[in-house]
Image (cartoon, rainbow, N blue to C red; front, side, top):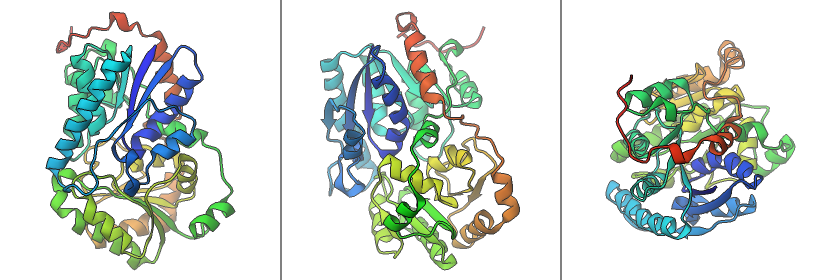
Length: 380
């Protein structure tokens, strides 16, 4: 089976990596891997280097973003237009048996639309979840263009059925990013402390905060509230630069001038090991929702970007307000009763076997019997 996969950001690579690894080890699969988006941009750490260093062959690169172009919603649309044309050409060239798409981002949206128009079966990872921002619309639209669904939870499956998807084409698999947390080799704490200049025996926050597309004009004010809260508490923190959704430019400027330690990106191994030693995650990344329960640490989720998403009880939801964020930091870091509670929670997004489940399904589903013609499912 020739499987077409497109990677745009650090976040989707973290989910695709365990799947790619298992497919690479199995002669049943031929991978056609395309890299685009911020993975090609120096400003965001040029993650294509990490993908190549992990041993994956990249079949094509599609420029999606133009550095220096406007930071707004219109440019996000133009970027999708660029990648849509590029993936259409690559699909025509590669003639895959299947497109494995995922999540709720522009590049994967584009390849899903293109494949559906070209009568290529699409299997979509993590449909049916509720999120804030424009991601909500993109994710559900991708589900309607897809033919087979690999949602992470039963709740997401039920939502897909309510969206009119046939339950016979829906398979609950968990979130594959948890596989990365479980299987990444451990690095010595002392090595990490020396490299990043932190002391893991003291409170340490990992911060990942992206712009909210529907609130792009407020992104600068929002990031200041978070940064000021961290600085006022005097807690060690490392900030990973955000993605390049509308509103990102001023966020990045503020992070770089904040005095906090920041990084454009990290290899998977170093990111996971830094994450394992964090006392809490802070920001608005889906990582806080999907992954922190497996690490048994609190997540301080700020604002509306993850609004409505299914979550474990380790997540502390707060508005973009410095005082409220500081109170959440106190609870996450210094409330020993809460931290003890968090150490015992289960992750609703799985236990780290998602990639194995997805790969096995790709081998066993008869895609010749999967209908390319979508029909709204209305039950029996």
